[in-house]
Amino acid sequence: MKKLNIKEETTLLAALLKEGHSRTKVKQLLKYRAVSLGDLPVSRIDQVLVPGDVLTITSEKEGTGHYPPCPGLDIIYEDADIIVIDKPPGLLTIASETEKKKTAYYKLTACLGERAGGEERVFIIHRLDQGTSGLLVFAKNEEAKHTLQGSWQDARKKYRAIVEGVPKKDSDTIKSYLCESKIHRVYSVPTDNGECKYAETCYEVVQTQGGYSLLDITLITGRKNQIRVHLADLGHPVVGDKKYGAKADPIKRLALQSYTLEFNHPVSGQPMAFTLDMPEKFKSLLHNVTKFKT
Image (cartoon, rainbow, N blue to C red; front, side):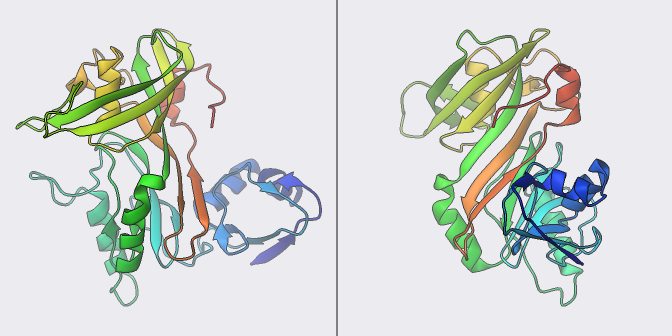
């Protein structure tokens, strides 16, 4: 373990490069939660540091929270109350009628059960569609679960989506009511029929390339399949989303990622913020995109 006292304003990357770490090594340390600022692990390579800050650097295998990794899952952050993971595309959040084990919930439950004592549990807070990748939060106790669920509407949730075509408006807000059919297909209607839920999605076009558009999306409400249905309503379905009208699947996955999540810690109340880089497959489809608005 090493303590690094910050004496001038800088970034985490610059500070660790100055200490002799390579850029690859810095990313590896962050992946394993091996760099902390105060009591919290740092997840961003561009984290701003100011005089008086103290970085703690441990072995990337040890991690700042001293929690063992979970095979097959990329844990972004963990403490006694919550776990934040980067869910891969294709993995369910929780069990379905046909799949019970290939889920983030099952994998985390099994992982925590194998730790010393085997008494830890995880609790569902929110969900991501099976094809969507990105930030997913679980609680580790009842108190954290109830607090997070009670305030989840206040969490800030942002997504990246690559859609087919180019929207007519550079930015807009899509509003409708979402209903679900008996075959579990969500569809949109303009007015409430008593059985549907109000949904609101804001988007901004960030980049267009080769007949595709990269959108920055802010969720105002969080309904099942909301982004996918609203973008299909717009006439620009998410790339790879054949269920809602996409014509092609060039990167062999749904081009939708939950990339930013901000909420207050359920026990300490401290603001928590997590951000993920753009998936490499997204970059390959939009090869000239070098920076994404945040």
